Amino acid sequence: MTELHVPDRPSWSCAGCGAPQWPCEHAKAELTATYDPVGLAMYGAERLAEAARDLPTATPEELFTRFVAWTRNP
Ligand SMILES: [Zn+2]
Image 1 (spheres, helix red, strand yellow):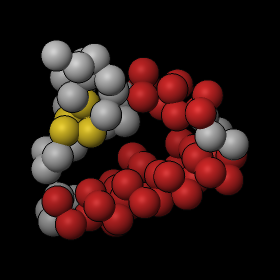
Image 2 (image 1 turned 135 degrees about the vertical axis):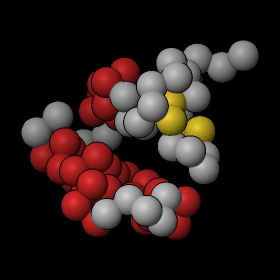
Image 3 (image 1 turned 30 degrees about the vertical axis):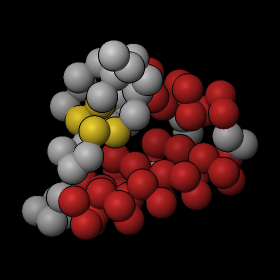
């Protein structure tokens, strides 16, 4: 049983805490502690690209806000 706050694909809920939308607040805190600002933004952009394939009904605006926008001011 994992408690890592990682995305549960293809739903992109949090596998660790069950939050409906990954990244949850825990994941954001862990990622912010792991990456420098540029790496954090790149990580978010990579997850955005994966999520865009898994979540075809999500709009680009929703995906950008969810995966990238928060990395600018975590
Ligand atoms: Zn979580």
